Image (tube, rainbow, N blue to C red; front, side, top):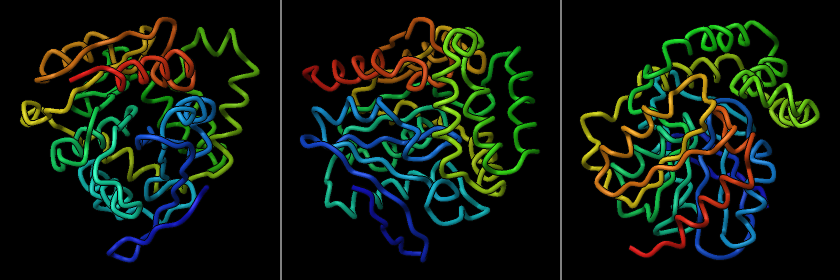
Length: 268
């Protein structure tokens, strides 16, 4: 089921809900929309009430304000929970979505049960030294028309090994990303929000039981940086997804879903 919720400032968000059980909020990385979760969300919906939304500036949601930050995006995530009368949800965020999820868990800890941060930096500029080349490739994607730009962004974050071995799946990822293209303005606003992100001074306030997930072939964010993030949190574990790049849910949806379900099933 997909619906639209109104925000207090007049904006709106496109939200999809599937499955039954404990609520699990999914927060997307840069690029793509609700449909880009693909089989990852479908698998999780077999045992949870999966709630996903298009951030402002993406998919079918309204335009993103120029002053958008990862923290303001977290406030929109709270509005999604409020709209569905969800007092507390488990939360999964990937890359930009992980940055947003971090602020959600810091600013509204009572609304977050268990937390999963995939491919998530402490600071937006904590990229692999060699990752700047991939960053420039991402920037070049923005020179294309919106639909092509979305498809370009979605594939540039995939590992080169995955792109070589799974051309058919790469095409499916491109098609899902291009299905609901964001405007150039929305993509630039989200890139700026990601670049300015920094939860370093507040890490000790992130008290949710957290699983930090990294792909071992991530060309943008080294796994060791994500392991340091896990070590800095009060209640965190670290897991590596073999043979996966930055977008672990696109390259290894079943493996990441298994990690998520195991984390959610753990006792306190």
